[in-house]
Amino acid sequence: MTAPAARPPADPVLRLSAAVLATLAVLVALKLAGNIVAPLATALVGGVMLGPLVDRLERLSVPPTLAATLVMVAGALFLASLAFLVEPYFWQLIDQIPRIKWELLKLLREYRDLIQSFGNVNDEVARALGDVSPQREDASAEIPTLMDALFLAPAILAQIAIFLGGLFFFLLTRRSIYRWLAARIGAARGGGDAVATARRVSETEALISRYFLTITIINTGLGLAVAGALTLIGLPGAVAWGAAAMMLNFVLYLGPATMAGALLLAGLMAFDGALSLAPPAAYLALNLIEAQFTTPALVGRRIAINPLMIFVALVFWLWLWGPIGGVIAIPILVIVMKTFEIFTDRPAGEDAET
Image (cartoon, rainbow, N blue to C red):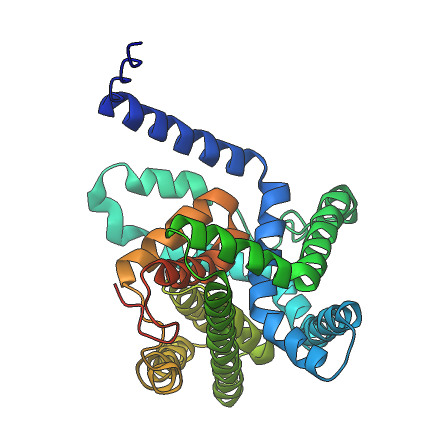
């Protein structure tokens, strides 16, 4: 009896084509299902950060269900307190939008003569400016109405429900998920010790949680410092600007750049002369201290990431899911990098610089 003929090796071109098509299909699916997948991904990232807090409560003999609930309630109370603190200043900024728009148009008019040599650019600016005046400007044209809010409410509430449900059940079942992941990783590595791999996964989660807790404390301190500096300068809504500085600092590079540009516009609207540059200058000085001294001193080299990888991750996730993608881009990148360390048998606390 003759042995069956060996199967010919697969064509590398066909394999590459299949991989490219599969990748494109996944990207399209993630893009189309963003309203569902984005809240779930955010919940998983939040669960990784909050997981060690649940473990501490469980070590105090708190039942797992109650521990997950308490952590979620504490997080919700923190966010609600922050929103309650910032809310009056937020509406003050909203009320200033028509005035800011008019001031920008006036500023463009003042400098319009400087760009006449650029051909049709001046005409395009003139058409964009039109005949807008502060009296004729509709102050409510760009502000969302109650009907807009009612129209968007179901979609927003659905995403919040998906996020809360995903976060709760991940916090409740993450141990079993980690055991399953450890078994799969052990099988992929040729039957490695699943118990040791599970311990490495837990250590990685603890490292990531400590990292982001430290970053949150640093960003909170930056926000308080920015609010204090802007209060001394006399910029209206300093507390809201401080909260914005704290939140935007989670989005590396793009967040601080956006904050500096916004403060430059706010300074031009609120002050005259050199004082108009004081708000962005104060923010950039504080951000420089945070980035060059505070963060390296507190975080060290436990998690160092190539700046190009950070930029690519931000661009990709912002394109995929918008602002939500920008917020979770760096956490996902860190989680993926530390997970790959498990495959390479590197200690969980070792530097992950690439």
